[in-house]
Length: 639
Image 1 (tube, rainbow, N blue to C red):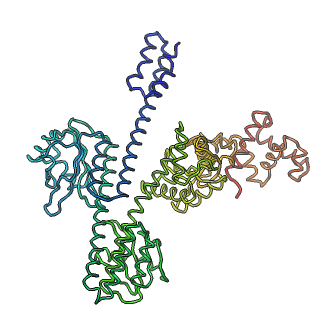
Image 2: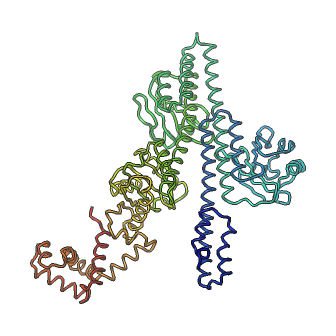
Image 3: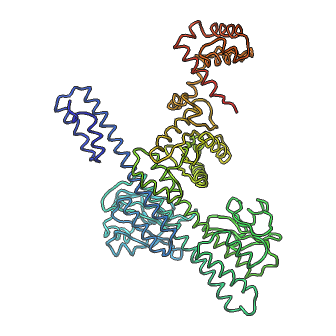
C-alpha cells in the first residue's frame, strides 16, 4: 500500500496546516485503490484523530491571539495617557479578535437617563454613530439596564427586544444583523455597553462572549482609572489653589502645598505606597499605617500599633459612607477605594490635632494610594500572565525556537540553562471555586517569582519551575506552604533537576507522573520527587483515578496475609522478607542483617510460605511479592 493510503499522510496534512476538507483525500484515494475494509476503518480513525488535533491547534492559535490582544489592552491601561485612545484601541481590538464587521461602545448618561454612542469601529452610518438608546430599548438599552450580556443572530427579527423607530432605522442604515452586547461594569454598577456586530446572520460562540466580557472589563478599568486620575488632578489643583490664596495666613495650607508637591512627584516618578506614607507623615507629623483590603500591612512609618481588625472594618466602612476621613480615638482613618472596590485604608496617628485642610491631605493621599495600587495590580497581572505564558511554552511539545525562549526568560530574570526543578500541584488544591483556583495560581506566581522561577496553570494543574537541584525538598515546601494558604491538604510531585529549554517538557511530564503516583499510593497532601519514588513511580505514573484503589487491592492479593499476621501478632515477617530479598536470598546474610539466628529466619520464611503458598519464591511470584513490599513501604514513608 502506498504512503498516500497510510495514516502518515494525515500528519503531513497537519504539518502544512491543510484545510479540513483535504483530510478526506487519503480515504478517497484508499477507496479508489480498493483498500480492505479494516484498513479503511484505520484510516477513518486516523482522520478523526487528525481533525481533532487540527481543531485543538486552531483553538490554541485563536486563544494565543486573544491573550495577546488582552495583554496589549493591559499594556494600554498601564501606560494610560488619553482615555479616548485607550477606548478606541479596545473597540478596534474587539472587532479584530471576534472577526466582526462593526464594534462599538455606548456609555450611560445619568443626567438624561439613556445611553449614547461613545466609540465606533467599522461604522459607515453617521445616523448610527449619533444614536441614543433609552434604557430598556433595543438590545443595547436592555444590556445597559439589566447589566447582563445579550446576543441575537438576527436583530431585526428578534422579538425579545423593545424595537423603536429611531434605533431600527440606525441599525438598518448600518446594515447590522447579528449583535452581541456585554455590559461595562464597575462593581455592581453598569456604566455602558461594548458591542460586536455583523452585517449578516451569525451566532456568537460562548468563547466570543467571554472574550468580549474581558475586553469590557478592561474598558471599565480604563474609564474608572481616568476618573481617578481626574479626581486626583482636581484634588491636587484644589490644594494648589488654597495654597496660593492663604499661604501667608495658614500653616495648614502650607502643609497642603507640601503634600501636593510630594504626591505630584510620586505620581510622576511612579513611587510606591511606602513613599506616600512617608510623604504624609513628613507633612502632617505622627505615624501612619497603610493596609490592604484584607488588613495586611503595606507600609508603616513611625511607632504605631495595628488596630483591631473589627475597628479597622468599622472605621473604613464609615469613611467610605461619608466620603471623608473619620476619627476613632487618637487615630484617623481614610478609606482607599477605586469605584465600588475597597483597596485598603490609611491609618494616621497625628502628633497634633488635624484641621480640615489636614484631613483633605490624608484623603488625597488615600486617592493617590488607590491609583498606585491599581497601577501595581495591572503591572503584576500583566507580568504574571507573561511569566505563565513563557512556562507554558517551555513545557509544551513540540518546543519552538529555544533562542527566543532564552531571550524571553532573560528579560524576566530567569536563566533557563541553570538547574531547575518542576513541581506539579494536584487538582486537590484547585478543585474548589474559580476564585479559589485564581488564588492558588496567584500564590504560585508570587512564590515562584520571588525565587527567580515561573508558574502557570496547565491541564488542570498548577506548575512551578523553581531554580535548584532538590526536587523532593521543593515539592514538600510547596505542598506545605500551599496547604496553609488553601486550608486543605495539597499534593505536589516534582522532577529534576534539568537545565536548558529542551529538557523542561520531559521534566514536567515526569513531575506530573510523580503526582499521579502519589495519589495512587494514598499519599495525598504530601510532596515527593520521581527520584524518591524510583521505579514504582514509573509504574504508577499513569494509573489514573483508580490508582489508589488498585494499589490497595494488589497489596491485599499479594502480601495481605503477611501484613495481617504482623498486625495481629506483632511479628516481623515483612521486615524479614525485605531483608531476605535485599541480600539476594541468603539466609545467613539476612540473619546477620536482622541480628537473629539463621534458624529464626528459616522459621519466619516457613511461616510466610504457609500464609502465601508454597510457590511464593518462584520467579513470577517473588517479583510480585517484592513489588508489593516496595509499594507497602512507599505508602507510609518515614518522617
